[in-house]
Amino acid sequence: MSILVTGGSGQVGKELQQILPDATYISSNEYNLTVEEDVNTILETRFDTVIHLAAKVGGIIDNIDHPAEYFSDNILMNTLMVNYAVKYNVKRFIGVLSTCIYPDKVKSYPMKESMLHEGPPTPTNFSYGISKRAMAVHIDAVNKQYNKKYCYVTPSNLYGIYDKFDARSHFVAALVKKIYDAKKSGKNKINLFGTGKPLRQFMNAKDLAIILKRMVEEDITESFNVASDDNLSIDNIARVALKACDCQHMNIEYDTSKPDGQYRKDVCTKKMNSIFTDLEFINLEQGIKEVYNKLNERD
Image 1 (cartoon, rainbow, N blue to C red):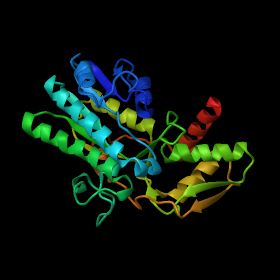
Image 2 (cartoon, rainbow, N blue to C red):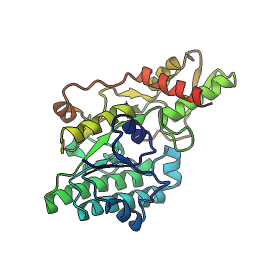
Image 3 (tube, rainbow, N blue to C red):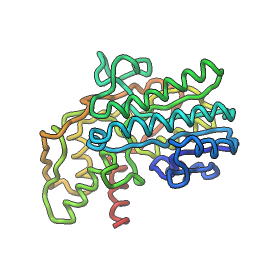
Protein backbone atom coordinates (compact mmCIF):
# COMPACT_ATOMS: atom_id res chain seq x y z
CA MET A 1 0.00 0.00 0.00
CA SER A 2 1.40 3.40 -1.03
CA ILE A 3 0.80 6.21 1.46
CA LEU A 4 1.30 9.96 1.05
CA VAL A 5 1.59 12.20 4.10
CA THR A 6 1.45 15.98 3.59
CA GLY A 7 2.88 18.25 6.26
CA GLY A 8 5.69 15.79 6.75
CA SER A 9 7.94 18.33 8.48
CA GLY A 10 5.29 19.27 11.06
CA GLN A 11 5.08 17.83 14.55
CA VAL A 12 2.55 15.12 13.71
CA GLY A 13 4.31 14.32 10.44
CA LYS A 14 7.62 13.82 12.22
CA GLU A 15 5.96 11.57 14.79
CA LEU A 16 4.38 9.53 12.00
CA GLN A 17 7.75 9.06 10.33
CA GLN A 18 8.91 7.19 13.44
CA ILE A 19 6.10 4.63 13.26
CA LEU A 20 5.10 4.68 9.58
CA PRO A 21 8.50 4.92 7.88
CA ASP A 22 7.52 3.49 4.48
CA ALA A 23 5.11 6.32 3.63
CA THR A 24 6.09 9.23 1.37
CA TYR A 25 6.38 12.46 3.35
CA ILE A 26 6.29 15.88 1.69
CA SER A 27 6.68 19.38 3.09
CA SER A 28 6.23 22.97 1.92
CA ASN A 29 9.92 23.05 1.01
CA GLU A 30 9.19 20.57 -1.79
CA TYR A 31 5.62 21.34 -2.88
CA ASN A 32 3.31 24.31 -2.48
CA LEU A 33 -0.09 22.73 -1.94
CA THR A 34 -1.87 26.02 -2.65
CA VAL A 35 -0.63 25.70 -6.25
CA GLU A 36 -2.70 23.40 -8.45
CA GLU A 37 0.26 22.27 -10.57
CA ASP A 38 2.16 21.10 -7.48
CA VAL A 39 -0.81 19.16 -6.14
CA ASN A 40 -1.35 17.54 -9.51
CA THR A 41 2.33 16.59 -9.74
CA ILE A 42 2.42 14.80 -6.41
CA LEU A 43 -0.94 13.03 -6.69
CA GLU A 44 -0.53 11.84 -10.26
CA THR A 45 2.11 9.52 -8.81
CA ARG A 46 -0.88 7.44 -7.68
CA PHE A 47 -1.17 6.76 -3.96
CA ASP A 48 -3.60 4.38 -2.30
CA THR A 49 -3.90 6.49 0.85
CA VAL A 50 -3.42 10.18 1.66
CA ILE A 51 -3.04 11.52 5.20
CA HIS A 52 -3.45 15.26 4.82
CA LEU A 53 -1.72 17.02 7.72
CA ALA A 54 -0.50 20.14 5.93
CA ALA A 55 -2.02 23.41 7.10
CA LYS A 56 -1.16 27.01 7.82
CA VAL A 57 -1.19 27.17 11.61
CA GLY A 58 -0.10 29.62 14.26
CA GLY A 59 -0.83 31.22 17.59
CA ILE A 60 -3.80 33.38 18.52
CA ILE A 61 -2.10 36.72 17.78
CA ASP A 62 -0.89 35.58 14.35
CA ASN A 63 -4.42 34.42 13.55
CA ILE A 64 -5.80 37.81 14.55
CA ASP A 65 -3.16 39.68 12.52
CA HIS A 66 -3.34 37.55 9.33
CA PRO A 67 -6.92 36.23 8.95
CA ALA A 68 -6.93 36.45 5.14
CA GLU A 69 -3.85 34.24 4.80
CA TYR A 70 -5.17 31.67 7.27
CA PHE A 71 -8.36 31.42 5.25
CA SER A 72 -6.99 31.45 1.70
CA ASP A 73 -3.98 29.19 2.25
CA ASN A 74 -5.99 26.52 4.04
CA ILE A 75 -8.98 26.70 1.69
CA LEU A 76 -6.73 26.35 -1.35
CA MET A 77 -4.61 23.44 -0.16
CA ASN A 78 -7.51 21.50 1.32
CA THR A 79 -9.74 21.93 -1.72
CA LEU A 80 -6.99 21.02 -4.17
CA MET A 81 -5.90 17.98 -2.18
CA VAL A 82 -9.42 16.56 -1.95
CA ASN A 83 -10.25 17.31 -5.60
CA TYR A 84 -7.08 15.70 -6.93
CA ALA A 85 -7.47 12.72 -4.62
CA VAL A 86 -10.82 12.13 -6.30
CA LYS A 87 -9.35 12.75 -9.77
CA TYR A 88 -6.59 10.16 -9.27
CA ASN A 89 -8.89 7.70 -7.52
CA VAL A 90 -7.14 7.71 -4.16
CA LYS A 91 -8.85 4.97 -2.15
CA ARG A 92 -8.41 6.42 1.34
CA PHE A 93 -8.17 10.08 2.33
CA ILE A 94 -7.82 11.16 5.95
CA GLY A 95 -8.07 14.90 6.56
CA VAL A 96 -6.78 16.25 9.86
CA LEU A 97 -8.82 19.18 11.14
CA SER A 98 -8.88 21.01 14.49
CA THR A 99 -11.39 21.63 17.26
CA CYS A 100 -11.24 25.28 16.11
CA ILE A 101 -13.87 24.23 13.56
CA TYR A 102 -16.53 23.91 16.26
CA PRO A 103 -18.90 26.70 17.33
CA ASP A 104 -17.64 29.36 19.70
CA LYS A 105 -20.45 28.53 22.12
CA VAL A 106 -22.94 25.69 22.35
CA LYS A 107 -25.68 24.73 24.79
CA SER A 108 -23.92 21.68 26.20
CA TYR A 109 -20.39 20.29 26.47
CA PRO A 110 -18.39 18.34 25.49
CA MET A 111 -19.17 18.95 21.81
CA LYS A 112 -20.25 15.96 19.76
CA GLU A 113 -19.42 15.52 16.07
CA SER A 114 -23.06 16.28 15.22
CA MET A 115 -22.78 19.80 16.71
CA LEU A 116 -20.31 21.09 14.11
CA HIS A 117 -22.73 23.48 12.39
CA GLU A 118 -24.59 24.78 15.45
CA GLY A 119 -22.83 28.14 15.29
CA PRO A 120 -19.81 30.07 13.94
CA PRO A 121 -16.25 29.42 15.14
CA THR A 122 -14.65 31.69 17.72
CA PRO A 123 -13.86 35.23 16.45
CA THR A 124 -10.14 35.08 17.33
CA ASN A 125 -9.43 32.47 14.66
CA PHE A 126 -12.67 32.59 12.71
CA SER A 127 -11.14 32.41 9.22
CA TYR A 128 -8.92 29.46 10.15
CA GLY A 129 -11.86 27.65 11.75
CA ILE A 130 -14.11 28.19 8.74
CA SER A 131 -11.42 27.04 6.31
CA LYS A 132 -10.88 23.81 8.23
CA ARG A 133 -14.60 23.26 8.70
CA ALA A 134 -14.97 23.59 4.95
CA MET A 135 -12.77 20.54 4.45
CA ALA A 136 -15.15 18.47 6.57
CA VAL A 137 -18.03 19.67 4.38
CA HIS A 138 -16.03 18.93 1.22
CA ILE A 139 -15.13 15.40 2.32
CA ASP A 140 -18.72 14.62 3.30
CA ALA A 141 -19.88 15.93 -0.08
CA VAL A 142 -17.33 13.82 -1.97
CA ASN A 143 -18.44 10.70 -0.10
CA LYS A 144 -22.05 11.41 -1.01
CA GLN A 145 -21.47 12.25 -4.67
CA TYR A 146 -18.69 9.82 -5.54
CA ASN A 147 -19.41 7.01 -3.08
CA LYS A 148 -16.00 7.40 -1.43
CA LYS A 149 -14.98 6.45 2.09
CA TYR A 150 -12.91 9.53 2.82
CA CYS A 151 -12.88 10.74 6.41
CA TYR A 152 -11.46 13.29 8.82
CA VAL A 153 -10.37 13.46 12.42
CA THR A 154 -10.79 16.50 14.63
CA PRO A 155 -8.00 16.62 17.23
CA SER A 156 -7.85 18.85 20.27
CA ASN A 157 -4.95 21.24 20.87
CA LEU A 158 -1.65 19.52 20.14
CA TYR A 159 1.83 19.75 21.60
CA GLY A 160 5.01 17.72 21.24
CA ILE A 161 8.76 17.64 20.89
CA TYR A 162 8.66 18.68 17.24
CA ASP A 163 6.63 21.87 17.71
CA LYS A 164 8.10 25.22 16.70
CA PHE A 165 9.40 27.59 19.35
CA ASP A 166 8.60 30.89 17.61
CA ALA A 167 5.57 33.03 16.67
CA ARG A 168 3.99 30.00 14.97
CA SER A 169 4.20 27.76 18.03
CA HIS A 170 1.16 26.29 19.75
CA PHE A 171 0.36 27.17 23.35
CA VAL A 172 2.35 24.49 25.16
CA ALA A 173 5.52 25.06 23.12
CA ALA A 174 5.22 28.82 23.64
CA LEU A 175 4.65 28.24 27.36
CA VAL A 176 7.67 25.95 27.70
CA LYS A 177 9.83 28.49 25.81
CA LYS A 178 8.75 31.24 28.22
CA ILE A 179 9.63 29.06 31.20
CA TYR A 180 12.95 28.11 29.62
CA ASP A 181 13.85 31.74 28.84
CA ALA A 182 12.85 32.90 32.33
CA LYS A 183 14.94 30.18 33.96
CA LYS A 184 17.92 30.94 31.73
CA SER A 185 17.81 34.65 32.58
CA GLY A 186 17.23 34.11 36.30
CA LYS A 187 13.70 35.50 36.39
CA ASN A 188 11.13 34.19 38.83
CA LYS A 189 8.00 34.81 36.77
CA ILE A 190 6.41 34.24 33.37
CA ASN A 191 3.81 36.37 31.58
CA LEU A 192 0.82 34.86 29.80
CA PHE A 193 -1.98 36.38 27.73
CA GLY A 194 -5.53 36.70 29.03
CA THR A 195 -6.91 35.58 32.38
CA GLY A 196 -5.84 31.93 32.54
CA LYS A 197 -9.48 30.85 32.87
CA PRO A 198 -10.24 29.27 29.45
CA LEU A 199 -10.41 25.47 29.36
CA ARG A 200 -8.45 23.30 26.96
CA GLN A 201 -7.91 19.66 26.07
CA PHE A 202 -4.29 19.02 25.13
CA MET A 203 -2.92 15.94 23.39
CA ASN A 204 0.59 14.88 22.50
CA ALA A 205 1.24 14.79 18.75
CA LYS A 206 2.63 11.28 19.21
CA ASP A 207 -0.82 10.06 20.35
CA LEU A 208 -2.47 11.47 17.22
CA ALA A 209 0.18 9.83 15.04
CA ILE A 210 -0.56 6.45 16.63
CA ILE A 211 -4.28 6.86 15.94
CA LEU A 212 -3.67 7.82 12.31
CA LYS A 213 -1.42 4.79 11.83
CA ARG A 214 -4.09 2.52 13.27
CA MET A 215 -6.75 4.06 11.07
CA VAL A 216 -4.71 3.13 8.01
CA GLU A 217 -3.80 -0.36 9.21
CA GLU A 218 -7.27 -1.21 10.53
CA ASP A 219 -9.11 0.38 7.57
CA ILE A 220 -11.12 2.78 9.74
CA THR A 221 -13.11 5.18 7.58
CA GLU A 222 -15.27 6.95 10.18
CA SER A 223 -14.83 10.62 11.08
CA PHE A 224 -14.49 11.46 14.76
CA ASN A 225 -13.02 13.71 17.46
CA VAL A 226 -9.61 12.85 18.90
CA ALA A 227 -8.81 14.13 22.39
CA SER A 228 -7.97 13.28 25.95
CA ASP A 229 -10.84 13.61 28.41
CA ASP A 230 -8.77 15.98 30.58
CA ASN A 231 -10.12 19.52 30.25
CA LEU A 232 -7.91 21.92 32.21
CA SER A 233 -7.78 25.68 32.58
CA ILE A 234 -4.88 27.56 31.02
CA ASP A 235 -3.74 28.39 34.54
CA ASN A 236 -3.76 24.71 35.55
CA ILE A 237 -1.82 23.76 32.42
CA ALA A 238 0.74 26.48 33.14
CA ARG A 239 1.24 25.15 36.67
CA VAL A 240 1.62 21.60 35.36
CA ALA A 241 4.26 22.97 32.98
CA LEU A 242 6.12 24.79 35.76
CA LYS A 243 6.25 21.54 37.73
CA ALA A 244 7.37 19.55 34.68
CA CYS A 245 10.19 22.06 34.09
CA ASP A 246 11.17 22.05 37.78
CA CYS A 247 10.19 25.71 38.10
CA GLN A 248 7.38 25.59 40.66
CA HIS A 249 8.87 28.66 42.34
CA MET A 250 7.98 30.90 39.40
CA ASN A 251 4.96 33.18 39.50
CA ILE A 252 2.47 33.60 36.66
CA GLU A 253 1.38 37.10 35.66
CA TYR A 254 -1.55 37.47 33.26
CA ASP A 255 -1.86 40.30 30.75
CA THR A 256 -5.61 40.79 30.72
CA SER A 257 -5.33 43.37 27.93
CA LYS A 258 -4.65 40.43 25.60
CA PRO A 259 -7.44 38.11 24.39
CA ASP A 260 -8.32 34.83 26.07
CA GLY A 261 -9.62 33.25 22.91
CA GLN A 262 -12.46 30.75 23.05
CA TYR A 263 -13.45 30.03 26.65
CA ARG A 264 -14.29 26.38 26.14
CA LYS A 265 -14.08 23.96 23.21
CA ASP A 266 -13.78 20.48 24.70
CA VAL A 267 -15.03 17.71 22.45
CA CYS A 268 -16.76 14.42 23.13
CA THR A 269 -14.57 11.32 22.83
CA LYS A 270 -17.33 8.71 23.00
CA LYS A 271 -17.11 7.83 19.29
CA MET A 272 -13.30 7.63 19.35
CA ASN A 273 -13.38 5.34 22.38
CA SER A 274 -15.95 3.09 20.74
CA ILE A 275 -13.57 2.61 17.80
CA PHE A 276 -10.40 2.28 19.87
CA THR A 277 -11.12 0.60 23.21
CA ASP A 278 -7.50 0.43 24.37
CA LEU A 279 -6.16 3.99 23.99
CA GLU A 280 -3.73 5.36 26.57
CA PHE A 281 -2.70 8.98 26.18
CA ILE A 282 0.64 10.39 27.28
CA ASN A 283 0.41 12.10 30.68
CA LEU A 284 0.50 15.90 30.23
CA GLU A 285 3.23 16.52 32.79
CA GLN A 286 5.45 13.82 31.31
CA GLY A 287 4.79 15.08 27.79
CA ILE A 288 5.68 18.66 28.72
CA LYS A 289 8.85 17.45 30.42
CA GLU A 290 9.87 15.80 27.12
CA VAL A 291 9.26 19.09 25.27
CA TYR A 292 11.33 20.99 27.83
CA ASN A 293 14.18 18.47 27.59
CA LYS A 294 14.07 18.71 23.78
CA LEU A 295 14.35 22.49 23.96
CA ASN A 296 17.34 22.14 26.29
CA GLU A 297 19.00 19.74 23.85
CA ARG A 298 18.41 22.09 20.93
CA ASP A 299 20.00 25.06 22.67
